[in-house]
Length: 134
Image (tube, rainbow, N blue to C red; front, side, top):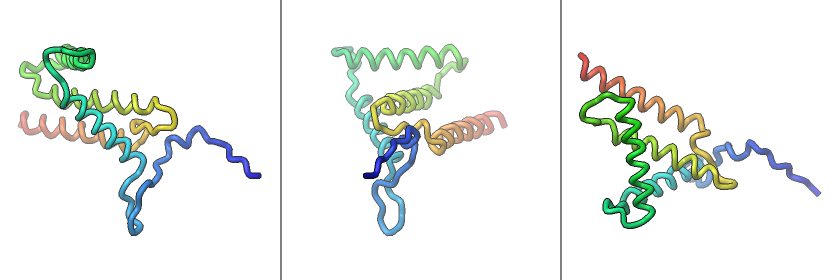
């Protein structure tokens, strides 16, 4: 009888879920990221601005929380970067909430995902600043 000891670090392994002809198409990382995107898009698409339910109230409070943080820390009159920061906040929040589920995969624990997010925002901010301040 073989006893399999469960390693606590197995939850951080990126495992292939679907492969075709030795090409990797779907991993648990991409599946959870897709689930995160679908949850976020369904949450934002079904929002009603007249606060008719508790769900609308929570989403409005999240919006106001991020808006107040952006106004306090970024001294820009038009707040043109608010949409990017709101999306980043919701992505990290939902990814970490999905990671709280037992036996799920937390995408923010993956080095590739955090590198992609940070490098993308770093390059975007520097390219915008370079174009504005020539």
